[in-house]
Image 1: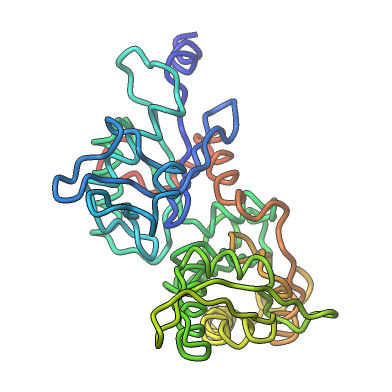
Image 2: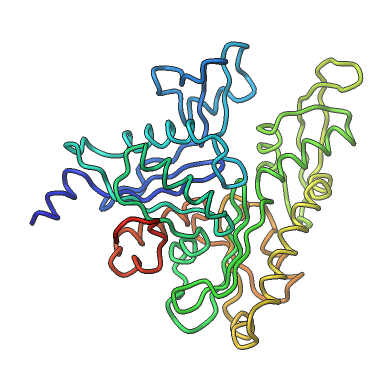
Length: 349
């Protein structure tokens, strides 16, 4: 009875703390918040605009468009916290927005983090979440959360392989018996794809574009594998020679060339994980294949490219953008079952 009352007053939270976006689930209600991991500041003062409310969607709209007195920043890069103070402010805002008034109670929180972060980086997540208002804090590896969220039978004695391509990191793992057997995290993902497109335009079109423009064109016509009908799009940028605005037409073939290096790095990561796995589990992959999650999984033809290069079936999860958040929420709902496999820091279980 007391536990139900506490959950009504102060429901627990599951957070997918991503480089590009942060998703928050409330126990019993599902995902209630999905906003960019961006904070807008008064330049020089490090004070969040709008009395601390210029966070998320509002702040992202300011990226690349701010006047001299305002700066929009992302507190995370490559899946890790680069600015503790701003990450704390961002988490505090998201936690307050997602939950009811808790009567002074602090919610238990399960946070999904990249598997490859260091102990120091993990401690930074604990500290930032605690100062932002969280009570008991648990960390779960993003790959495991993605496996749970995509409905894979990770508790069974067979291999389930996940490849989660987020904004800052790509998490690749083979799971069996509810744990990661072999896993690897590389800091090559959606952000690096966008930067590769920016650099390609600079080198081949003498055109300077922003990362948000690169992301938009990637979603519009980008592909990892030849399309039945190739696409074209017009893009605006700044001519690096004349210094005046100019338009250019880009094709999906050209974008594939721009994305070659980051995609090759992700493919190499997947191959290295498979090579480290025991033969019995590798044999399972011939049937179970690989599931792609995260925003990068939405790139056209990525499943076809990986299937061709690896020789095993590859499919994209349903609603890949929210797979990690859903898995983290499921873990929270069944915390008694998963608690022993989570990182609880130094506090009591």
